[in-house]
Length: 353
Image (cartoon, rainbow, N blue to C red; front, side, top):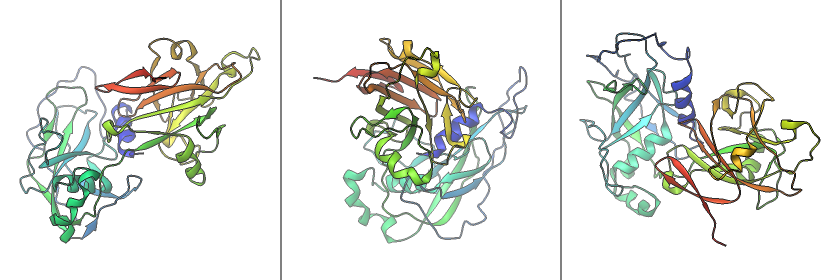
């Protein structure tokens, strides 16, 4: 899973975990100065990671813009091979080589940013013309194949949801010797845990510990993946089987329960996405999930509560799930569906028989 998404989403919502706290009826002013600082290790040779699961990061520090009050801010960078580090072109064609690429910070709320080394490597390859695996054979002809290159950065800050607060650093800094092996973007993934089975393998999760020792089992059986059309968007899709239960009259306790993990760190809340903050909480969503539109709800970051659906059929009942991590939204519909998208909104389409 691309960890930057969940930490960024958490930063947007968590009050008190940021560098500042929102005040009542603040008056926003446009900052006049915003600076990115020269990296202490800018002359050190660095090699970027080639796997999205890598925790390796590159540090970029910047000042905190003065908005006239203490605001919940998010920080990110613009990465470029061009010394001017131009703004990202939002209208660039998908098959065009970009001059700059925006990269979120692992923890978007801090001015002391940690930028995914893997994402920097992907960006460097894209800006060298290696846009995807279909053109990976271009890599040997790029400057990246000859050795380390200088990579330039600007810092970006904004107050989420407040128009006109986005500011880009006045200056550009660089790391002078970053080596980027061939690295192309691949779909990311996250995990589901609970009364859920893999419909193809029949493997039941049964709340198996979400730990590193079970990583192969989770990836093989209980992972949601980014669709190829939504790579690096933080949207994950999967279809699983709801474990059949008996109607004991215990109400919501008889539902098939599940929640999500962005990493396999054990039962810690750090990587958990749930329906509620409280552990053992169960949210019955049966009626909504079985409706024509399906269930559309909010995710609690570091939440330990579960979603639950009644299944007294005696068989594994298919359920299709979409998780939008940056938006902290979950979409759940009983049945086995193809999923298309209108922007970030999922569209559940019946599979052809």
